[in-house]
Image (tube, rainbow, N blue to C red):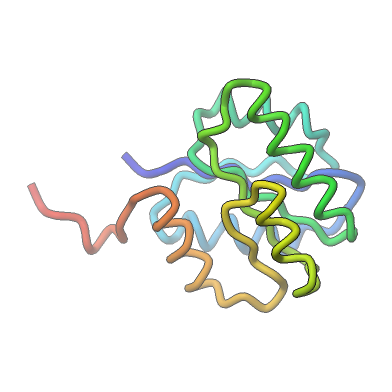
Length: 138
């Protein structure tokens, strides 16, 4: 069974082309992907993550509010007894904020320009999955 990934656009940011590219790339790599669409509240992202039984919540943030939104998401997941769901964040993230995001509880950070192959490899590592061609045959 493929790992389930939630790709979410928190806050007021209305640009979702990158999130859609990430969602498609992960789907094509063999993951089951749920995409929330734009302008999602943290509470709704957490609710969807729980309902869909995801392994990873991927936040796509271009607004500059990445540290606050990531912190709120990690906190809300922990409060919902879902702290085992990894949170990753990508988007317009200055290199000076990467460690801040990791300190806030992000499992991985993918600034603009991160190769999609790197993203897929990191998500596979986080979920303990392999590429479909690498899975043992029955």
